[in-house]
Image (cartoon, rainbow, N blue to C red; front, top):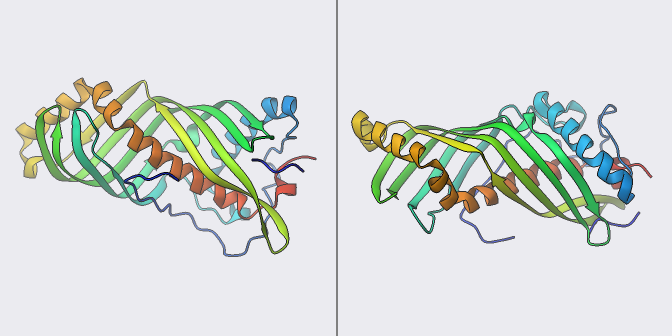
Length: 252
């Protein structure tokens, strides 16, 4: 089979997914497999990816992957934007809800250049975490530490996967060496508890300002979220690809 042919960012992501150390495994029998011939790939890959994502809601015992609803992420940092959001956002003990509800609209593979593409939409993607931040948003000072909830509504996501074939114990595996995404939510809802050491009046005012200007606020830090989600998706994909040999991933 033809093989399917990082960037510096202020983000640290380690996904908590229980995976066995052994490398040889099989896809669950009910998962969809696709031929990678051009016409068949375009018709099949989107359905296969959506099916796999939805069924990871309760985990995949055959791959020793724990439930992805919610997806647990120990920490990540979104660096300060270059415009109205001049604040580092540090999140810990993150629960990411809604990923398994994603709908894949299209999927394709460019075998000559070892690239896969997909377009998806996620109705509700909700990040719950402990946060720390100190800086300015829309020229207003902001500082706090506590619980937060950031919800992205109807997020259109473009996925680009740069792949390579690697060998382990004389078996061929697929590896995602770079995974980039673009995020285009219809709406973003922000809520940060305990801003300004629990000053309710100031906290409510800052939350109101952020939500009234949510498009501008999110646009300024979009690239940080895109890089973070790219790393998250890359890790998830490689959890599967590192354990299932290429010949068992696709139809001949």
